[in-house]
Amino acid sequence: MSATPSSDSSIPRHVAIVMDGNGRWASKRFMPRGVGHKAGVDSLVNVVRACVDRGIPYLTVFAFSSENWKRPEEEVSGLMNLLIVALSKHLIKLKSDGVRIRVVGDSAQVSDKVRQALDDAERATEHNSKLVLTVAFNYGGRWDIVQACRKAMEAGLEPADLSEAALSKYMAMAYAPDPDLFIRTGGEVRLSNFLLWQSAYAELVFTECLWPDFDAAELDRALAEYARRERRFGGVTADQSNTREEA
Ligand code: FPP
Image (tube, rainbow, N blue to C red; front, side, top):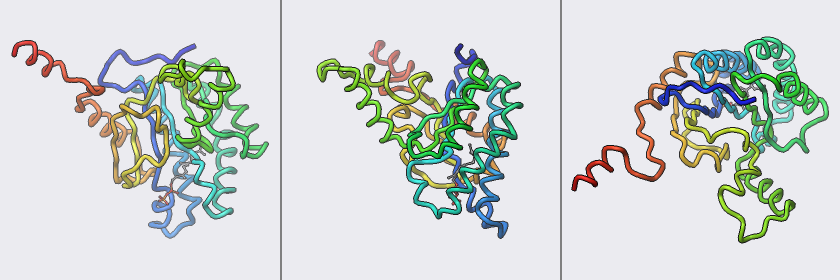
C-alpha cells in the first residue's frame, strides 16, 4: 500500500534530513554527546508527527552513516542502544499514527540485536501507509550505488541495457519517489554521502538550527523555503518557455 500524498504541489512528497548537531547541542549544555542523541530522538518523533499532519508521505532520516563507525566506541554503542530503546519506546505510537518504518543501509556490519529491532519495526508497521519513515542506518550514498550495480549485474543486466531507469530499480529506496526537499541541520553545508543518487534534483535547505532544537516551526520554515523555490529539473520555467514561444 502506498503512502497518501498531499494534493498541494508546494508540499514536498519526500523530505530527507541529515540530523546534525546533537553533539554540539549537548556540549553547549555541558552534557555528554549521548544526551544530545537522546534529545535528537525526541526531535525526530516530533518531526514525524508534523510530517504526518502536513500530508508529507515520505520522510527519510540519516540515523547512522557508513562513516559513523569512526566515532569513539562508546558513542557508537550508545547510538546502537539508543536505536533499540527508541524503537521500543515509540513503536506503538508510530504504528497507531499510520507510520510505516523502512530501513536502508548495509545490514551486514550491524549486530544481530540491532538488526532484529529494525526488522521487527519494519514488520510491525508494514501495513501502514500514511507516512513512510525510512531510517538510513549504516547507509552511504556511494554504498547504495555500488550495491545497486552489483544487484543489476547479478540479475544479468547487459551493459547495453544499463540506464538510469534500469539502475534506479536496484537502489535501496526504489520504493519511494526521489527526495524533493533535502534538509541538513547543524550549520554544515554538505551532503555527507546521503542519498547521492536520489537527491540529484532535490532542493537543498541548510539551517544553523541544531537537530535537537528542530521542531514543527523549523520544519515549516524549510517547507516555506521549498515552496518559494522554482523547480526546473534542468529545463526552463513555465514563464521562460512562454517568452521563448512569443519571441
Ligand atoms: C549527528 O550529530 C547525528 C548523528 C550521527 C546521529 C543521528 C541520530 C539521531 C538523531 C538519533 C535518532 C535516530 C535513531 C533512529 C536512534 P553529531 O553527533 O554529528 O553532532 P555534532 O555535529 O554536533 O557533533
